[in-house]
Length: 539
Image (cartoon, rainbow, N blue to C red; front, side):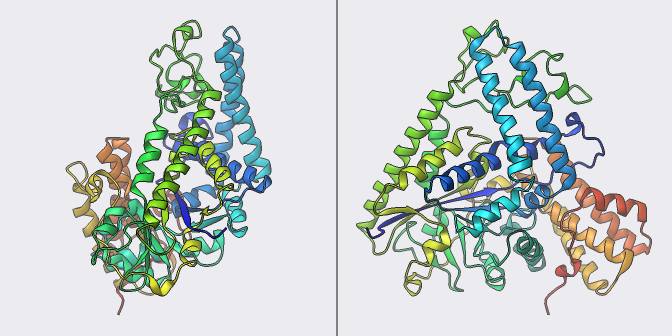
């Protein structure tokens, strides 16, 4: 039957740069590297396993995925991969102890065995089936036409706030391109705007790097000039020719509501935070801070927090079967609701209406344990639909009459609180920008002053560019706004700016400490092929 309705899922897989340079492999020294371990175990591997099952069962599936350049770098960092494997080995050893410890309580014991087997399976899959190479595995599905990989900025910079500096925009968009081609080959069609932050200043650079489309928030489309005749259910084209898709506000809110169901696993309630210290000693930092073990026994509804098997009978335990059934039920409800809205939209427009869900990949696995099963159920159910399909964004765009897209200039917009960048600029983080603006201007000054330097000076200039890019990351103001890991976020910004200033002054005095620079290069080793000259002004 002829296709009449379409939907698209686009997920952003991203982490800030969390590598901590330690020679030790001890998990207790991991710190914020645990974020990296969790995105592999709780999001990327579960999603890849979904792709595997769908392909093996010949179920059609198609979605977009943005893997940020920083995350790509960390996924190929041998030191981090070694520490991740060591982390899973610690979890496996702890699981053996948990199974033995909970032997007197059959329900908790069964849950301990379930999580032990999952962690063991992930360890085997990562090291053997996927050869420790998540990027290569994702590229396999890309080459099979199952997923579409979108490009992104170098360090997830919030582009509207650096839009007044053409050199910064150019650097954030050009530097990661060589990495994209190395990891995935070819040229990307789509470009992921960090936090969906749209500003008109971005568009000339999108066109310069031949990006076909990007995604913005629904209100950025609806308040565009002129008003889009087909609302958010159909792409528009900017005056310069970039295709713009808007994410479906209703789809996002519906999944947020479904994923908060109290029957689902409480992913933040880990036994590492609740057991006596002698039981979780292998997951304690040197100063006694507790770490996650990966063993979680309670749904979000649970109130009793003792964690002891003797007291667990008074607690509400997680029911994997009930949660699984609810995820399937939610998928059916979501699919029916989406098709119903698309049918209503088609009554008022020509062409095939599109519902686009775009969000953080961590919502599927990391924050919503049953999220990957929800996605798998969606694709399996959609396979039985006659006039509806899930499509990658570019696949959908090229099915349309390209000359028939309405020309619209989108409005400034973003994700986050209220949808107009408040998350990245308020009293908690506004201090960053005056220092960042000054440092960025100085970076351009250095690139102009030293256009042809080599050797130690070139290394220092390239490292200065890395420090600027790290300081521009939107993750730091976002963490400060949410009051989450504020000390870490502040230190990351301040250290990057301090490192840049040290290099700037060293170049001015014509003396650079080789030892200090070498250590910094090992700590902040992103973008090995970076060229600081990208910060030069265009003539």
